[in-house]
Length: 136
Length: 239
Image (cartoon, rainbow over all chains, first blue to last red; front, side):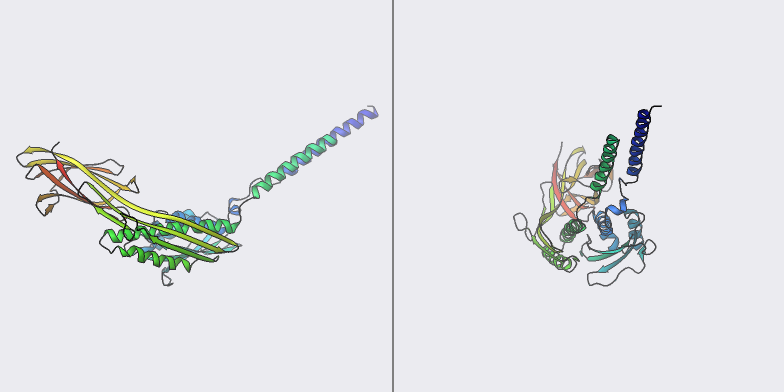
């Protein structure tokens, strides 16, 4: 092989190696992040409560003291991987739920708390405040 | 070699650009405020609805204003990112009085409605939001029908009942259907011979009763799924 041919071979080899390395490195750059990273915890919580309260369901459940039903509903609407603990207060600020509304206690690196005002659709129009703590 | 370096740089910069784009989003505070506005609007709607439930079932019309005042002060204490000023005004434009319009007519149509206008100001965390919205909750019932004479005063009466929530078909919660047997005496049919639920808020009832005269007055007292009561009367003729 001539000297010139050897240089061309080496050149082609390095060129291929550079492109392969670039492709290999680029696959390491994440294209999408985890869905839990996209939204802050508070957003997940408020959106879940707004959804539950859309047709007055949340207010009715609180009015009927349906703590188990609220826990079940929150388990459905809050993504797996986020822990929650909810407390319900009446208009005067007294705690109403006599059992925990939780999916097993708060855990995770971050804990956030939101407060959600509820107006129940019933003749007396009672107001409640739901404090939702989220960990994730 | 130079071409290979150029290709490699292009691949890497494209990937970095795509990653950077995927990280772009609105600030958390902005998103949180939008969610909060939505939550207050939804709660305000429920207050108007609950007040209409109360007023349509015999409560005072002023209960709407009283409930809205309670709601204003309730949410003012709540906003964790700053100050929330909510101002609610029951509609006073005719046919509304104190934000309520009850028209349980004898022409086959009955309306129970409540309407209020809201302005909201949220401030704090360097962000200020002014929002205005109106809430109108209306339950409307429409009845019509006819009868056919079977023999003497015995009549087969067919009544259609249509229910609307905010001009959209809605489902019945409960209904009391009555006919005027003699002046001042409303009676429920002894037996509904046929009942059809069309699934779109329209219901058909057929019953046979002995009613004197050429006209039959019927009345429907309806409660929708939200608990709002509404009533309508209509005079049916043979047809």
